[in-house]
Length: 467
Ligand SMILES: Nc1nc2c(ncn2[C@@H]2O[C@H](COP(=O)(O)OP(=O)(O)OP(=O)(O)O)[C@@H](O)[C@H]2O)c(=O)[nH]1
Ligand SMILES: [Mg+2]
Image (cartoon, rainbow, N blue to C red):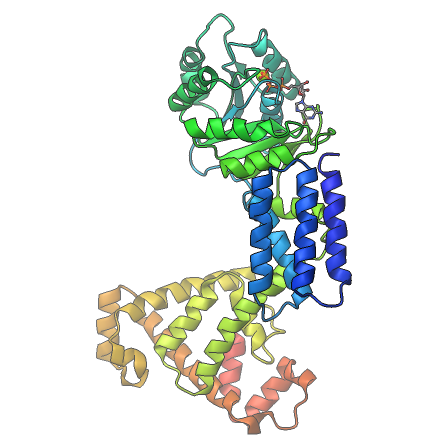
């Protein structure tokens, strides 16, 4: 399997990191050297190897994480830099609300025609109306080859072997093609890179105006891949790369270098000759497999959570000073705006973590929050700092100015009062007396504590609102 040698070398390197007692400069240097060697042996271009490893070295030495230990951090850095090398870890999505036209380009025999059929099959299986068109006027029987594949996967194939100009073929079927969700355009290859080929394809590209141009190349191309990639890139924007023949014996490094050169992410990989042998490429999965990192997802999650927690801590510190005004509420609401963070924040309030909040309730809450934000933008600074000045005429004025119903504004003020009361309550350690960690997490115990503190009514209201 392609890259298996690279993979096993990198896995060895990483287990060295895991088994080391300390992470120091020497270890980083040693690791960097090993990664360099592994990449060079896999045929990755030397300049890119140096670029990649120097950013790994720099980050490993300079960056410090608050939550990850040094080992975890080094592993994360290696992972992130290798993923970035592959063009980032966002997976391919079709463009929304428009017809998707995908133009496949690349040299002779790299797998364009086969991949056109595979993509047809892939999108058809996802309930899309797909059509293929052959614009290859170079290879004898190119149209017939694509037609056969189309028959196999049950996708219509357009083309006309009697026409000798690719643009004319496309124009002939342009109207027919407009009826499909997705059109895949197969283009011609040449046995060596020449301006004539690239100019022909650039002109076809201008005519088709594709939503994506995928550069197709085999995992076995080696060092020439970079030059190919460069030449195509000079003539047109390439939005993605498809690496075929991943099931072969190629070293893969040439293809990886090419991806880096065109600065486009790998979108799909071909893993065999059959039409089903196409996989959507996911850099995160690929790199974790390459590096043998079962733990990477956990580490990334941990690092991200730490950032969220930092935000929450900052807010908490402010709240604990008791200076809670409407602007703070707005800030908190904005933080909650990120889907899912609402339940996270609830989870941070003792006793609230165990309440089940459904997605619908969350959605309704978020809608409400959006309205409140609009209302707040019509308030004066003074009103936001000290909402106790609020009266009927002010509320009417704000409703008028913002277009938000005055009942919604009253609800906002009520919510603010509740929050403020709750914060004051939590600030007083007296209220927590006699409670252990566990009972702090139980809604019933919290309810009792609240009642003791004289907040029973408020608590009941809160619970009612949330359920
Ligand atoms: N093992 C394997 N073979 C593949 C893969 N993709 C394509 N091939 C084979 O590669 C050869 C060339 O594929 P084509 O699809 O004809 O390549 P092309 O880029 O259209 O070639 P031209 O039209 O001549 O430029 C065929 O024998 C395919 O079966 C793959 O993912 N794995
Ligand atoms: Mg072909």
